[in-house]
Image 1 (cartoon, rainbow, N blue to C red):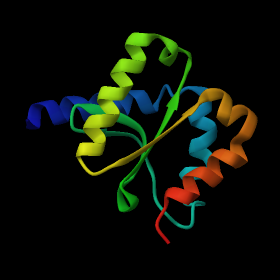
Image 2 (spheres, helix red, strand yellow; image 1 turned 90 degrees about the horizontal axis):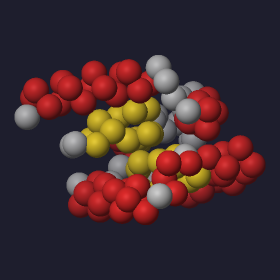
Image 3 (cartoon, rainbow, N blue to C red; image 1 turned 180 degrees about the vertical axis):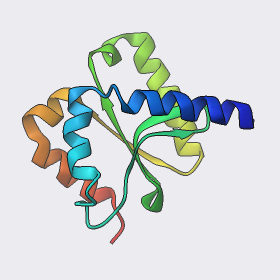
Image 4 (cartoon, rainbow, N blue to C red; image 1 turned 60 degrees about the vertical axis):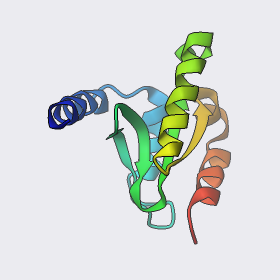
Length: 117
């Protein structure tokens, strides 16, 4: 298990250096604790998966789906992934790239609604 965990961490570290534009935009808000002081991690490994953004204190995962998530096999994979993460006690919310580009304030409001008071 430890070997897998090290491998996932190394892979996640590499992913942080090559984030899609939509994730970079959202990260500018999440990284500065602008969401009522909650801290988020980017490209955070959880079990066999690497999440886009995770708030440990709120058990909240934020996923940004790009163009590759439109294919049926990718949607099926996302469903299995979400199911696994929810079984581990996480809440998963998803947005598409266009949501970030065209409606960032709405995305931030939605994330805020999932954070505990």
